[in-house]
Image 1 (cartoon, one colour):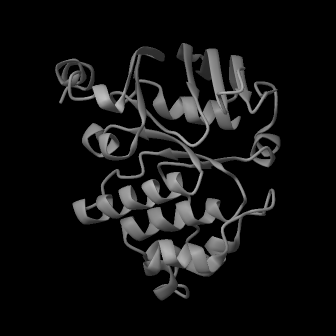
Image 2: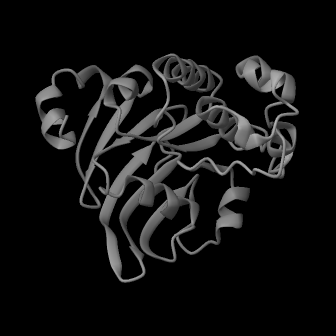
Length: 235
């Protein structure tokens, strides 16, 4: 890994049981970037995040995070390095209220976002602290899922389809939140199908198809590549 990269993924392969999902995926993420993996359903985007997090049963290749090879590390060890994962299903606990959900993950290093900053970022959550976690709207649950990992001290965030199923006004709010986190020095790896949303927040894009990266370009080039994007994403 060069000093320029927080994450370097090389020749990554992954399986669910006998199903071979990733076929040598390769990409990198630099400090302070928002990088988006774009692709159709089933392309391998979410599997890539889960492989980086160490929650896929079988994987091989190289995942270098801040100079440390993590391909053989357990997920709890990877989390302690400062990698945080917000899954598409959000993982909000129905038996806990908003505050209990928010305080659940352990702090893995210093510098986690304090509650007053979190409530400044997500004012809805402060108003709903005593509500049951799963009684929140979809957008509020997404905010809670992201807020929860900001407390931990992780500076590398992986967000899986954070805008899925949300109303346009909430998507805009999520976009402002991502831009603010970037401005505060967080590095973000984003999985999205909504490339129009991704184009408002991401620095670079990788196109994933059949478990491989088949194309890549920067934000400045996204509109020049619109015809290719339509073909890749089927939109």
